[in-house]
Length: 228
Image (cartoon, rainbow, N blue to C red; front, side, top):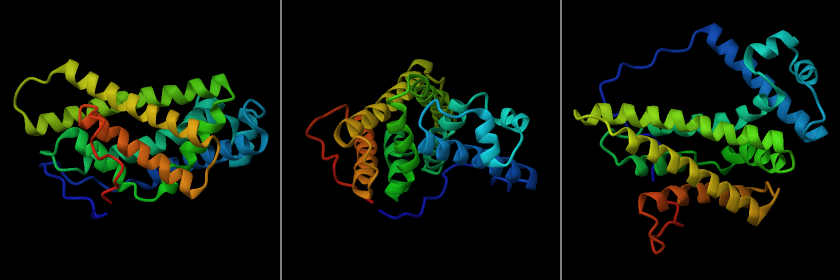
């Protein structure tokens, strides 16, 4: 399967390049997220503060709160980042492609298993901290609204009829549930193993989970072959 995303099959105007201010804000947000994850690695959950993160990211405490409400929110942005990348790939898929195939293909497009490394590491570390684990779950739940919006955009371009809100919400909830299931199975099988082999398995589980959903959970479906 080609790694070049197909052309967008709609009439949207090309996206404008981000401004310098937007780039600076994105860089600051990333620096905070990176600093929080590094502190989580070195000190463990619950053993560092907002002030520690601000110092490590070379920003003020006030600046931190311009971006995040808590240490857990800063860490959860790691998961948000992966899910945002997957949604961006989804939006590049052809408008007439079945939505669940687009979801699977979007994950395939994240070709390097290391793309799931930060999310996998955070998921592993969160298992021993209820508050961090709750923030992780909130990050996945937040993505539900984004999936609904992306699906709504897709249907608006391909169908002139009234959108079925129940379908949209059931679809988004199912996608998120399958993603969580893949993470749970991976952690049960590999624990905190973040080797390339383990991360490749996690990526494949995420892809296979979307395949199961798309096949109507047919157990005989050939879901383990990466068509990349």
